[in-house]
Image (cartoon, rainbow, N blue to C red; front, side):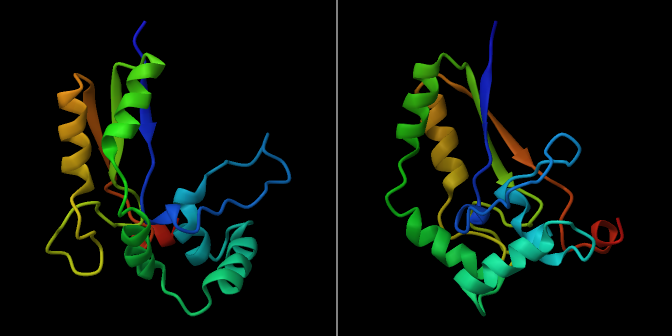
Length: 152
């Protein structure tokens, strides 16, 4: 039986905040990758917790300012370390998030303010292929800031 690993990694990894749910049996449980959605969503039941956390820890910082913090934190990131761990687990493939619903791509792009300077995707795919690990990429078309999402 083959299995793989999916990695949600992006600028939402900077706050890495996920409010504690009161009842996870009935509520949809989304992780820190939904941080921006909880900041924007006027209907969300966990919005207040996220806004309070953001004000306390990142007061005045725009969500997209996390790009710079992400790249600073990832300066020593080595995809080979992840790939070695994935291979040791017995997984035959790994999937990395290229763009989650926040619209930020993990590679240089012409879209201002929504991309990293470093090409994390190329580094990850190159390291995966060298190690003989199949690689997949997750690219979301939906974005939290679009009118379609905000209307529900």
